[in-house]
Image (cartoon, rainbow, N blue to C red; front, top):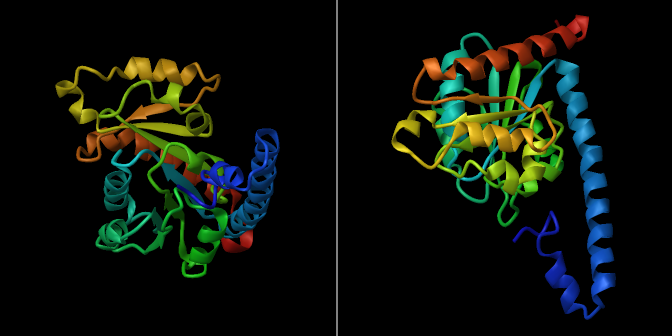
Length: 251
C-alpha cells in the first residue's frame, strides 16, 4: 500500500521486532510528524491561492465515481466565463489529463506510483507549472480512494466528495472520515437511478446527517445538462466568495 500515509507502517514495525504497544506509538508519532509537515506546505499552497483569488477544490471519490466526467461537463459549461485548470492525481497514466486538455484548459498529471493519495508537496510542485495569476478556478482531482485523501490537506478551500449511485448508499457510514471532511457531497450518475433498485438517495442523505454535520448533498448526472444545475450553482456561489476576497490590486 501507500508508503507516504502510513498504510504500510504497521508491517514495517512488526518486522523490527518491537512489541505491539511500542509499534503503535511509533506509527502514531510518524503519522503526526508527517501530517504536521504536510499541513505546513498546505498552508503555503493556500497562501498562493488566496494571493491570486483562485478557488481551489479538492475533488475526491472512490475509483469510477465520475470525477473526470463531472469535470469535463463543468469545463464545457464554464470555460467561456472562468479561467479553469486541473491537477490530476492517479497512480499511473495521464489518461484523465489528456481528456481534460482536449477541452482546451491546462491539466497537469501527477502520477503517485504506490501512493494512494495526493499530498501538499506534490501539489506545490505542480503549481510551479500553473499560471495562478491567470486562473479563477483550480480543480484538484485526487486519487480514487475513500480513505487516505481525507487526511491530507492540499491547501484547497473546499473538499467535494462524489458518491455514485452505483455504490452503496451506506458509504458515509463506512467511510466517516472522508464524508465528515466534505464541504459538499455530490451524488453522481443519478440518471441510472431508474434502473437501480439497491440505492436510495434518502438513505444516503440520512447516513450523511448521522455523522453530525450539515453537509449538503446535491444530485448530478454529468451527461445531462439540466442535472448539472445544482452543482454549477454551488460553484458559482463559491467563486463569488473568492472574488470578493481578492486583494484590490489584483481584482
